[in-house]
Image (cartoon, rainbow, N blue to C red; front, top):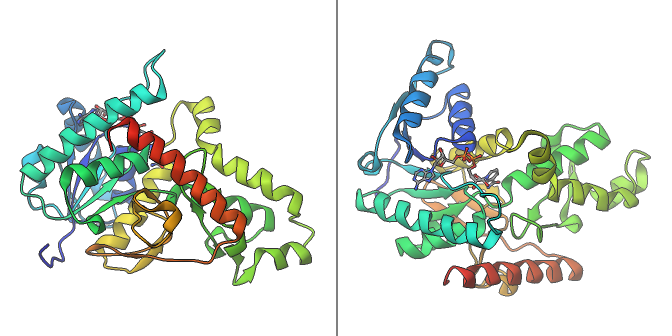
Length: 317
Ligand code: NAD
């Protein structure tokens, strides 16, 4: 991979999630060029036109246009938010197979362009589909990243911050594992302004141990609750993807709970892509960070990895 400083992003999938990401990029004044690619070309064109009309009010210039896979050739980052929506009567497994096939086709086309940057996948089930892109590309695991538990972790920080009346940015901790039902909170590692959550709970009447499980469930079930009310979730993930984009393209060495292939960092999750604290920079993953987990958390990690292994075998991985 060549050393680069440009910030060209190719976005594949201009639906709710893709366009929330694009809108966040524009509003945060981030990037040099944004190419919108979708199987529905007209949609990508319309979205590009609409976004461009916001440029006079944006904090920085951004070249935005609809394009095709050839435009990925000199992109620094390809973000995949494309996917089929669940059809009535279609099982999750059938949808998984459809989206896995879509990922394979997209990966082949992106690589066929000569793309030599980093893949960032958000389409669900994100951990499995990140692994599909990794396998299809045959790239080094450091260059294929999924959004993992970045959004879930943001939800956790928001929920704790709200209860304690503390800025969510001062809540540190992680949701780990599958972005899905088997995800878990590494409570033993959550801190508030550097203070372990156990000490916080001892000292404040604002948060009790009995509420911890409720917080976990509200984080885990957030997507379902939002979808029940407005049929999709997109702003939170859009901003999460911008955060990951900046960590990569700014060469930040930031630590984020993104999804990438575990080799021997966590033996229980060997061979599986899942959300774990990971140092991220311009070349993608630097390394997955080993944090000490409680016995119970290690069991949850292993359960989550086994659930992901079942989905992987359903798509022939
Ligand atoms: P959407 O239906 O609004 O958009 C999907 C887009 O993909 C559409 O514009 C469609 O035309 C396009 N598309 C479909 N097949 C394509 C192909 N082969 N090539 C190019 N484009 C193609 O859906 P959405 O609400 O934007 O959600 C997108 C994905 O993001 C879903 O899988 C959703 O579950 C996921 N999501 C992930 C997270 C996360 O935390 N990772 C959070 C929310 C949503």
